[in-house]
Image (tube, rainbow, N blue to C red; front, side, top):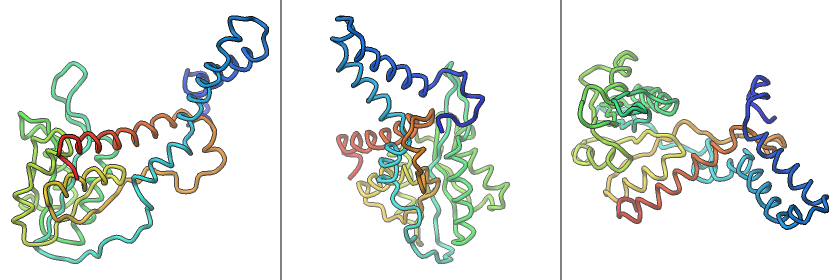
Length: 256
């Protein structure tokens, strides 16, 4: 309900914060101490703020708005030797001390496996994106390409764009290859990330077919989703990151 596992109960987390604020607000409302009475509205507002942003159901509304329904009809997949499957990378590029450290996160793995599964249907080529720039062999793109080879994709069918640092660079740096490709171009990324990626593609006037994967929305939320949970803020943060990123790209003229 409040925790992913009972072992989390003694650990400080969202539940303890919300519970503490609610109890403090209730105490301030019942006490006769003038100092606390003046803080009643602020404590109540703070408790409400903490409750809202720790509630998975409310964060899920934002996530669902961005992702769309997971059972929405997908484009028809046809086998074509001229197909190109572009997989946008996701993961860690740098260690906290500033040294290069490339690792896929869970969303990168989801995109990679979904992209390979799509390639098995379409044929053609695959193209992986993701830096950091400076060492083409030590990049997210190169790491994903190596795993794709282990999954059965021929080396000659794999391309890399290893110097991109963000979504705009992911597509801007491969736009020429997309335009000269003879067949359909498929864009694979997380469903939450797809609106921003498509907005960049429209700005660059690229004709791509979206293939959203890695849905994060709660499919059938129950009443428990309306209670504070340690995973609630993370869901809000992921959605707000995409919304802010999209508007920032539009302000820069990098998205449409």
